Length: 445
Image 1 (cartoon, rainbow, N blue to C red):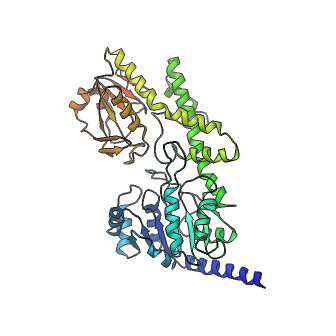
Image 2: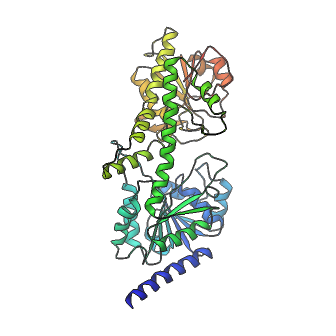
Image 3: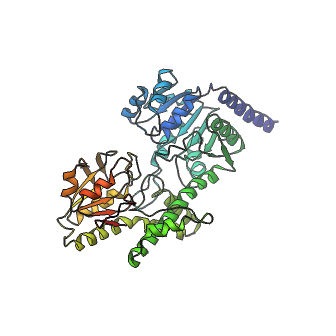
């Protein structure tokens, strides 16, 4: 009889929450208002949910509360509208958790200096939530992490409250699939993977995500959902590493790697375009595969492809600097004492995000070699990360002419590369931004 009562309680709690979600009367909390959290918050508010943004960064919280946008993937007018409608509020503390029905966690999951997962943000936020957790709530982790985090790390912290996952509250993992700067695929039309800690949690989470996302894909567990995300980014890291390795080999063989790839990608089957570059950046590709690599050791399993891909991608900035020295040497100039202008510090085209950007490492390596380094990037005019603190310069004719070498490290659409080639003394193009501009000044990666 007790078992029957327990089962009825689980079902009743899930049904009540599902009904509130379907009616859009459920109150939503989004913890972390960055590249993942803010677009998610706006999408939920646009369909009528009342959403509370929770962020320890007071400046961010205040900006969102005023309807001031700082994320490129969010339309300014969309944020302003939902704020003016009273559908969005923000706070820097977690006391409001008990008033919410769904809590979505979108906090950073970086690596430490030894490439081991740093779950301090996840643990801290989960501990805060546990202090205010009540029956009938859904907690969903969107941060990318290794398989097992939701069940092995979050669940024990939340259950320390005395409440049980799948019985008193619901727990799920739905990895973010944000591609900053992608105008075609947004939070709404990008397929969403969801895995629950238990069947009831999965059911509730599916209904929640289906309210604003066009196609939701259910998997058997939170652990499976976590594996999906790290596999996706590992797939990209490995294939980019292959392209980079081919570029290194083509450099040795005096073959134009871009010509090879352009021709290879004309094949209509059995191949997918991946390109070389000065390295990989952003929060996903340089970091996420190492989460899986780290977790695999627990099972006495060596992820050889992941390790090799990481090694190959990480050495690309060194190769760029080595090639820069060769280019200058051919002009009878030493790297030490030469002026080098980097075009682009963001890790990706037309984006203001320079997290883990290979241009940062190139900047450091050039300075270490004695070069006089400057940069231009209209998207990121100031850099302050990983020991690099510098202000960019205007892309004037004088700046281009004065540099002994211009290195194109990010391909931004607002740069006139024909002008760059015309005015610069020498150009090292790591992104093939000078495609179609024939000049003896230009050396490709």
